[in-house]
Length: 110
Image (cartoon, rainbow, N blue to C red):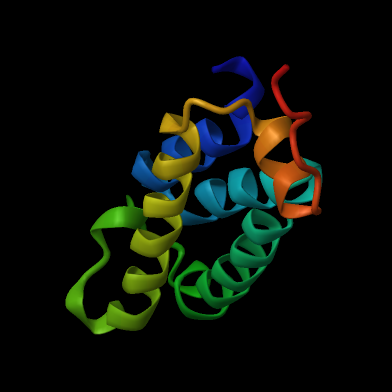
């Protein structure tokens, strides 16, 4: 599970209660460090949208519990959370998931 820390850290940031900008900074840290292109792209979109819509409000809250007026952003965060949960719960290690996406196939059993 330790090789899936990116997904775990995203889930923690989305679920934490506190200053929104702190959670966005945590998501940005994962975005900069991850090798998962899908995760990096999703985080870029979520972080940019959150900075535009929520950070100027400088409020406290939980990113997965956004009010109804932020429905589109909330839906994106839920989709991101679902993706991270799926990757975290996969029986394959992260390197294998990413390698398969890049076209690698495991050697045939003999």
